[in-house]
Structure formats: C-alpha cells, structure tokens
Image (cartoon, rainbow, N blue to C red; front, side):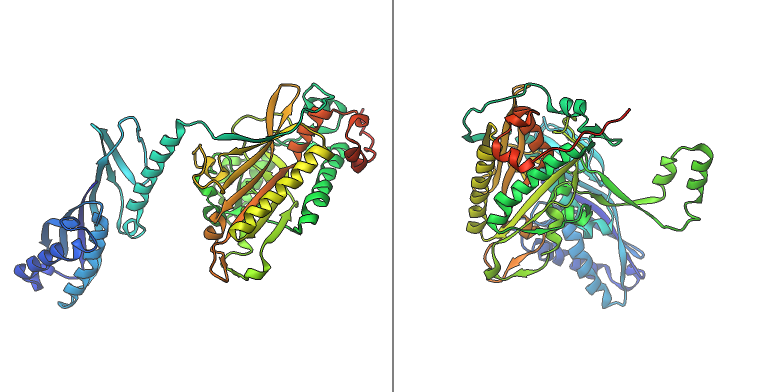
Length: 497
C-alpha cells in the first residue's frame, strides 16, 4: 500500500521572511528521520520528498507506506511545525489538500465504481488507485482510514457472496396431520377475517384473527415469559440513527428501513404554501414537503435495539443477572426485499420481542430454556410440524455475509414449519445468542468486569398464524384441544352490504 499526498500549510505570516532556509531544511530533515518514522518498523514510515516555502504557505509532498500513513504524517507535521514556527511568532491557520492518491494491490475481478470522498478510481493490472477529495477536517475525522476499512468490508462481502447461506438441521418434529391445503391468507380474506390496508404490506385484522393473535400472545406469556421470569417493558417504535449505529443495523438497513421525518419547524407560515397548494389542487405536494422536513431515524426494524438505550452507559450489578424482559407493545416495519406474500411476508408486522442479558453461561442457558419451552408449545399446544435449524447469525446476514460465525455459541436458531399448500418451509420464529455485540455497542458494563452477553428471540404473530392455519385450517373442531380451549368462541364476522 502506498500513499502520496500533496498539501499546503497556511501560516499567519511570511515564513521566508523570518525563518532561514537552513533552519527549515534542518527541521524537515529531523522530521523525516524521527517524527515521521515513529511507531513504524525500521526502514518504514512516511517521508517528506519535496517542500517549498512560498510566503505564508509551506508546500509539501509526502509519500508513505501503511505504517505511518501520509495523512497521519501530515497531521503530525502540522503540530510539530506549529511549535517550531511559534518560536518565530508565526501561527498555523490551516491546511489545503491539493492531491491525495492511495494505491494498493487489488483483485482484478472485484470492480469498485464509486466511493465516498473519492473523486476518481483507477483499476488496472492488479492495482487499485484512489484519488481522494478530502480537506483538513476529513483528515482529522480519519476519513481515509475509514475508506480503507470500507474496501476491506467490500472484499469480505465478495468473499462471502460465493458461499451458500449456512443452514444446519438441529431437530425435526414428528409428522403431523394436516387439515387444510390452501393458502391461509386467501381463506382469511374470503371469510372477511382480514382486509388489505392502504399501506404496502399492511393488513387490517378483524375480531377473529385478532383473537387468534391475542391467544398466541397469552400462550407465550403463560408458557414462556411468566415461568422463566421475564418482565414486560415497552420499547420505542421510533428509532434514532444513533441507536442503529450502535446496534450495527446502520451497516445495511437502508434499503429496508421505513424512514421517519419531522418538520423543520411547526410555524404555520413556513407550511402555508403546502397547505394552500392542497386546498387548490386537492393533491398532496410531496416534493414541496420533502424540502421542509428532516430525517431523524426510522420505524422499528428490529424490536430489541431501542431497548438498549435503557441500560446504555450503565454498570450492572452482578447479583441482578440475568436480566429478562419482553415487549409486545407494537409493530415492526421492513420494506421487504423478497416480495410480499399474504400475512407471512409483510412490511408491517406484529411481534413479541424477548431479550435477556447476563454472563456468557447465563445467556446460553436462557437460550436453552427458551428452546425447550418453544418445543412444548409447537408440539403439544399447536401440534404443528416444525424443525429447528442453526443458521447464519442475523448480524452477519445483514452485512451481506453468509456461512456460520466462527464462535459456535454465538448465532441464531430458526424455527421453520411446512406449508402444506405449497410444500415450502417458512421461518416463523428464532432464538439468537448475540454474544457481546449489544453490550459493547451501547457501552453496558458488569460491575465485576466480567464479559456481558445478551440474547433475543422474536415471535412473529402473523407468521405463527400463517403456519398454524396452513396446517390446521379453519375448522376449529379439528384444532388441538388445548389451543381450541385457549381461543374459546370466535367473534361473529362483520357483514357489509
């Protein structure tokens, strides 16, 4: 890797008038021999290969390797030069970056077309050259280093792209009796139990389907949450960018997020032209509105990230572990990329989120206890045909990676059930052990200093309904006795003329 940087250091006075040429030459030589080699192996580091004093400006050309990158060398030089010139009552006003080129070996088949802060990219003969468009502020923000990390991420994503997503069968239930062979969504519509809402991937659920959803929730509370000691909380359903940055979702959420914007001001005069346009045309002036709002985050994509603001920055006493909570207070939103279908592939869906925090062994033990509880529900209460699979952890899949996490204990178990009407398996539930990802991201520590882990489990009510109704149908007499008893009588259907 090679860095070539041309920059100008702007001073508060004429350098050539107060500093002799031999004195500046000696300063540059000393920097090349010491300052710009500091921390690098022998024979490595950065070097000033050309310099010139032009009145109040010092022009420089630096070359370097990866050990002391040219932008780091320039910042070091600026600070040292400030001390040197300060003796002559001259200050430094700033820097201009004229040219910055980074060259490295690169795989020919991996083409890079565009990168932030890069004005030109050349790729030829196994080499990649980046011509950066950066200023002093960008150097201080370490933008060149972040560009290089982004390139490494793209290499890693390309490496994973050719691999199949990991899927390893852990358990499969016995074969069960099916009493339905059609798409349950079509039957729900036909019976008037659901109706498509105005929004994309959004349904209105009638009293019958709602009662089934609430029964699923009650079963989950009675069979899982209460016996295992989980306490209910209410998590926000609007999520700020800071939360998604800490949770890691900001790495890949953009094509699937539902964005939330707020008015730049609620001053009626600011919005008068929009209101007047609507009154005259009876049309919503979307383009006019876009100029008057600002994005502040998005709707809930995964339910657990906003919870982590609650313990963020806190120190947890060891004796209160494990912490076990759940949230069932609202909906989640994802702009589904794989295509919408029925009640199982939605943009707006209802989910119960279970979260637990503890030491490594506690988190793994909670995962095992949840798995046992789910197995009983699926086998004995719902009597469905299902299976467990060890899959690519969600946080790897979200970053475009497949395969399995190297640490076997960290990862996701998916619960899948067969849909008799098409023979496909639908993932309707998961349990994830996330390791230290969230505690580190939100700076949550343990009083003893031991490593803190967490896990989460998402229960999708629409997915549970899709699986259950696809296998057991709509004749309640054929439903498992325990579940039929839990549901009770279904309400009467709304009748419309």
